[in-house]
Length: 553
Picture 1 (cartoon, helix red, strand yellow):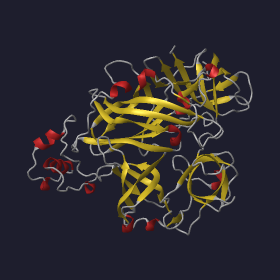
Picture 2: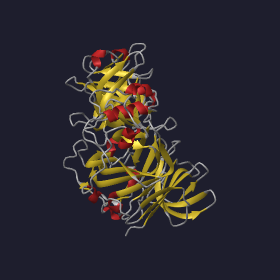
Picture 3: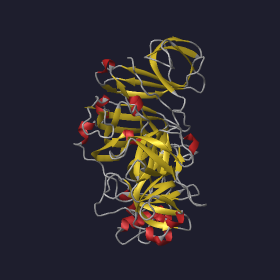
Picture 4: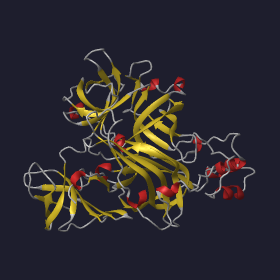
């Protein structure tokens, strides 16, 4: 099984919850083909006292851009499975959603939220894929309309059970946000003799909390309210919610690192954040990029209106312990609403504007902004640099001048950041560095077109790394010898790989009915292995070792 991995796990961030990944063929669980015939369980229409919220974000580790222009994953269903009772709570079901994973290598995308998940411990996420489409590259990378496509077979009929090494707990009144990292770069492999591609799922789930440095999140919505005293706004229509036609809200906090760019009246230039936090902005559509902060359901976010039923009002008062306002409420009101299978179409949630996410804003964009991907073509100075555009509107030239915008004191200009939102200096914008840029195109009608940048996300994860695949020849105490599948570290021949206590291991076992990823593993002679590390003069120290046992015929 040569050419097993073209890209390997870059998994050194603390706090990651690594998952076992199953694609089971039986046991009474639904496959993608069966989802259409299932009557999905809708969320209850009232917020019960002993429930929290769970959100699912999607992201992707980079796949090889020389092979694919798009990797379109079609997701039919997402469920949580209780650790105590094996009961399932649907987080998404309905018309399958198709997501281009290659567009998510720099950001996380909200996929689905549910705000009435019963409190308790959950150890398993079930993900059902309906299809995986690989759009292959050709000579016109900006136009994929006529590119060849390939649909690899989905193991386990597309049903993947993600088993957590450490379970997570949904607490009453709190939000748990899970980032599902569908590592396409490590999941898609060239079949020998280049007859096609295999899909060998490598997926991680990260619980996003204050100890985890997750990717940036992008939200598009409408400003519903502003608070100039506390420097935050309510962004509604930003979060898809299972069982609801309306998208819910996020609370956006603005701090000293936040930047505001206006392409309605100021040609995409940076403006004071105070110009955003005015009543005139209510109702305007903006795009916000930032990182998640912890969130609970504060009492102040709940507004009881006449459109709510008596049961809703009683539940709200009990939830927030407003006993002095709960006249006419009894225990039966709450008990009747706690059954997840029951829902009254005439009932409505307590408040559609109650936020399900809190975000520390890095950039807020008003008006239309382009999003381009590419490589740094010339080293940057304080004014800007040239960019080789690899993905974007077809009207964009292959090489484009990017302007780093400055601003008056107290106003932030172009934000240059890592994928996690860590602020960087322009000196890291060096030749051939992968980047994505949000900006406004300023056309001159000639060769002096330029992109006025609002946000630049820099891929720093691969610096100095080289990914190697091959077969294990011999194993020692703290090293092993690998026969690489092709060139490794600039030469052909056996490679000595060193490991230590910091090296992380994954074992991937795949059968016709099952795909399992487990942390840990033992390296043995004859195994097919993928590695991530740094080439050095005296060998190859490995950060990550992936042991793969593909038992499919």
